[in-house]
Image (cartoon, rainbow, N blue to C red; front, side):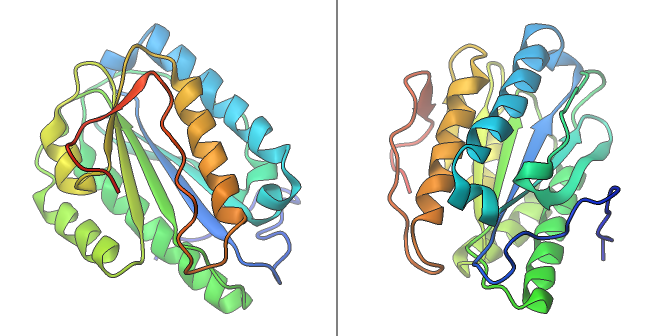
Length: 226
């Protein structure tokens, strides 16, 4: 079991009496993301926090974590209420090893769900949002674990492919919930994620929130969606 890490006076949860949602951002920082892609990704992640926090309801119920991966996996931001998310400054290098990163992300989601249960708060279905531009290796085993959780209604797993990505592992992990980014405007994508979080916050746990159209620079990498 992964341990919850606290920094200074950062609270483990805000408004525990309200339903809460966990969103984990799983980002590829392999060498092919160097230059403009990683710079724009950092900018989009930091703007994501600020824009989500502009909505009081979402700010009070959304908890986030950030995990990066190349040849190794790193927990960049352990679970915190979105308001306490630290600025990120990711750097790109190395190869791409996807399966261990996904395992870490799933374990962190399950840890957060246990935390919610202990805190007496009702959880929304958690999200993992993975971004990758590379060939991630064999994800068959961990994909089975992800699919079991998704089919049991315990997880939403979305993947965003960046130019040059290998669609096979993304579809194994996300099924039809795979998107592809045109160019490197990550801001529009994270704007969609933030608005989706707001849509969730306006629903009740167990209720299907209103879906939002994807931004113009993001296509569905599938013939079916949701």
